[in-house]
Every structure is written in structure tokens, then in C-alpha cells.
Image (cartoon, rainbow, N blue to C red; front, side, top):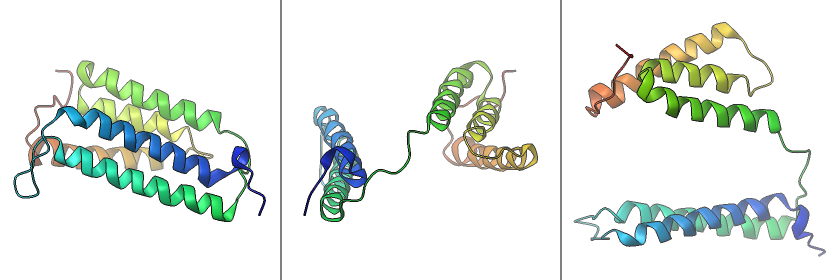
Amino acid sequence: MNFDWRNNMDFWSGILLLFFGIGGFYMALDYEFGSALRMGPGYFPRVLACIIVAFGLFVMIRGIRTGEKVKGTWGWKPLAFLTVSLALFGWLMDRAGLIPALVVMYFVAAFAGHEFKIREVAILAACMSAFAVAVFVYGLGLPFRLFWW
């Protein structure tokens, strides 16, 4: 078996998951772990990081066994639009409120796809914004402003 690690799709995905899992575990070391019955603030981040590391190992080993090559090139347009949509959400959240920030995020993120239908995106933005308000503002009681006024 001839393994080409430079062009192996699952191998590099597994490495990326390992990197994020180990980084998350390292950052959570400053928090108290606790126990399963009395969880501390570091319990969930460390357990989640271990799960991510396990997935990373699984994907990396699968990549070594199958040797599937990377097909295509980087999708720069989707990467750019998704990054900009998240940055706009963070910037607008304090200035415009939760609902306008979500609507702008959905519309900008929709440009990352192959087809953009304004009616579908408007329905999605309305439904997801209502769901976010129901869960985060009313369900969890988080103090988010809904609009700028």
C-alpha cells in the first residue's frame, strides 16, 4: 500500500480534529474538573475535547487505511462568505440586536451556496430567528437585546 499523506483527505481532517481537541483540552486545564455527580466548570470542555480527539484518531486512521485523495480545490467563496457572516453577526449583536444580527448573518451566509433564493432565505431567517429568540431569550433567559431600540 502506497500512502500519500500530502494529498489524503481524511488524514488531514483527522489531524485538524486532533489539533482542536488537544487545544481545547489544554485550555480547559485551568478549570476545576469535579466529578460526574458534581461537575466543575472544566468537566464538559475536557470530556468534549476527548470526544473530538477520539473522532480525530478515527478519521485519521480511516484516512490511512483508505488512502482517498483530495478532490477539487479550495472553496474560497464559501469560506469568505461564511467568515464574513460570522464576523458581521458578532459586530451587529451589540449594535443592532439579536434579530437583525441573525437576519444579516443568514443572508450573507446564503451567498456561500451555489444558488441564492431570496424567498427561501427570508423564510429560513424568520423561522431560525424566532427559534433563537424562543430558546435563548425566553427559554434560557439570556439578556440579549432583540433590536437596537
